[in-house]
Image (cartoon, rainbow, N blue to C red):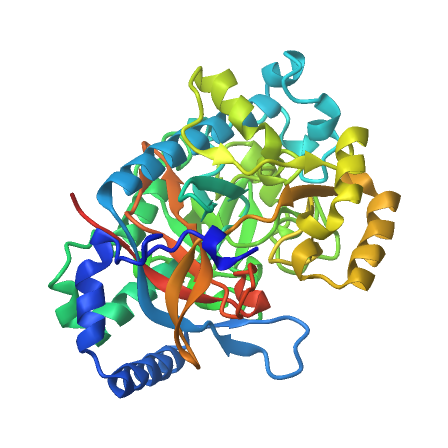
Amino acid sequence: MSNKTFYNEMIDEAGRVRPHYASFASWLSEMPEERISQKRAEADALFHRHGITFAVYGENAGTERLIPFDIVPRIIPADEWAMLQAGLRQRVKALNLFIHDVYHDQNILKAGRIPAEQVLNNAQYRKEMQGVDVARDLYAHIAGVDIVRAGKGEYYVLEDNLRVPSGVSYMLENRKMMMRLFPRLFSRYRVAPVDRYPDILLNTLRSVAPTGVADPTVVVMTPGAYNSAYFEHAFLAQQMGVELVEGQDMFVQDDQVFMRTTRGPQRVDVIYRRIDDDFLDPTAFRKDSVLGVPGLLQAYRAGRVTLSNAIGTGVADDKSIYPYVPDMVRFYLDEEPILHNVPTYMCRKADDLAYVLDNLAKLVVKEVHGAGGYGMLVGPAATKAEVEAFRQILVAHPERYIAQPTLALSTCPTFVDAGIAPRHIDLRPFVLSGEEVQLVAGGLTRVALREGSLVVNSSQGGGTKDTWVLEA
């Protein structure tokens, strides 16, 4: 693909600066390069000092790493954000209705809109949740929806993250960093604030407390300090003013969850859990889990505690279910989807598999249960040997994979060692569902720092940018 096929967020096809980047471009032209290098070093030092790191599993070079932060913001005009916001609200509403339906009447399956075996045989489907009523019928209270922009500037949803979506702490810290480093630059723009996110999150969590609880106690449950997103768990607990707990800090008695405190046991009403379903309760799921709370599922099924997100939400963010989300919008809301999916081939279908095998070198192939950029083939960037090796895996287990065209992900100017150069980006806005569906204006913009790379995941060497949504 030539660079001409990529939509550049800052520069149009004629080489002119787009209107919403004009003030930034003039500011940048006034900034000496050594001053910018100095600011980048300052940002790295501050991130280190505040412990804003993530762990990379399987690396020998130490467990903690900084996520590279880029000081060129990603700027989104107000009208574009209004469309994205409407589309994200619509999508997350439909996904929550789908999860409720799957665990209750299964109307969408009876109507034949989604093959029943795709749902009921899915590894993320939890039969323990069948018939269980949850507060407000909401399952995904926190959703991180990955959005990409293709060659003509059109937006697509790349995937829905409904289990334990991460990255919001970097959205908040990136904003603080930019305001600290470049206060004058902010005076040139009306950038919508993001700092209310912890308050909105806490209100959302409180609004889904079990029935009859007037003043709920909310906690953040972490697997512990060795988890890759531990910084975020501690950060969000601190920002919301709630306790950060591990499984061993809690116990269940008479179907109630309590945490141990210096003043004795305290009842817990809402658990914002950052632990996968399998590890939540050793009496119900993995017997070898030392991270969970014995009896937690029983308390949850009894309606005495809320888990955010609910057990079993993964059935809706699995990549084999993703192709059906536009149909969910039509089925549950009787509306046309505002945001579109990336065209997707389901390798379990014979015709789709035949096409994928014939075009492997052009496509991105993903494991349906995969995450973090692992277990995938990026055809155009792979060697012939890698493509052939992947072909064998695909033929052996087609049902485990989907394939998509290699999107011409939009680029944004980014500071790299050679100076400013375009790098590919995506966007993860965070959608909160409680009494109402809310978003803060923006999200986490991830950037592929390697030249030509389309993989933005931090585990694969990606970085982040501050995301500026302009106020109308």
